[in-house]
Length: 303
Image (cartoon, rainbow, N blue to C red):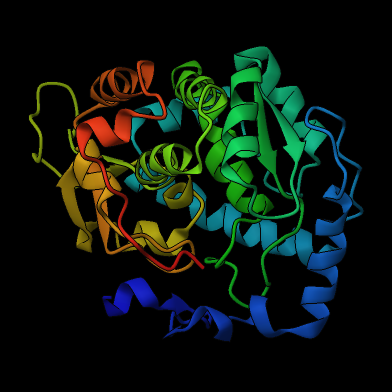
């Protein structure tokens, strides 16, 4: 296990430590607030309205800090389709938006809406809901002392990452592809395989073409993955990551960790390449595909 893979930023200066050392995992008052908001998801039905949250001024301030940092980072490090999606559905700069506000912007563009989650959601529910145009999103805000990185998905991640994707018809269709595939699978092993492909594409994917007329590798990689788009720290170190050519066999064999910087990223040449690859892989994927193709997920601690 590499040091980068097992470590996560725990201070505003970017000092690396274990995920347990992050203030978002150790500050009792913060955890009380985080858990109170997460508890609102208990018993929540997919598609039911999310309850409104009365965000504090400190939470709005964290949002404004991240918005200010990511605005420039996206212009420097995000792919063109991402920038176009931001223009289509601008993200409010001054306040944490309610789920209803986000859904009102997304639904006319792609038919997607946010549905409430309290944290990580098991694969069948999380991926399957995408077929019907629902994305599970949380409502709590990351710890204010380390605003540019969080060891778990928060509302900033969901809006600045997945919310941007779901304003783009082309990205939204990729989510629906994963949803259609998940709903016809029965085994946890098959769901795990497609979740790993989802992880290294829609969460941590990059594109390697610099622009029209330029071949693969002609410039630095451009981010499209939601986890990258919502993390200033990840974007700032993008040019130092190992980027491998996107290949399904390699993806499922690569360990990953849900908290901490990823040491390895996979690059599609462009959005057309990504779409063709995912469509070809997911269209006929069933519970036996992994065995037929010899796909074996790598072991790994995802905490």
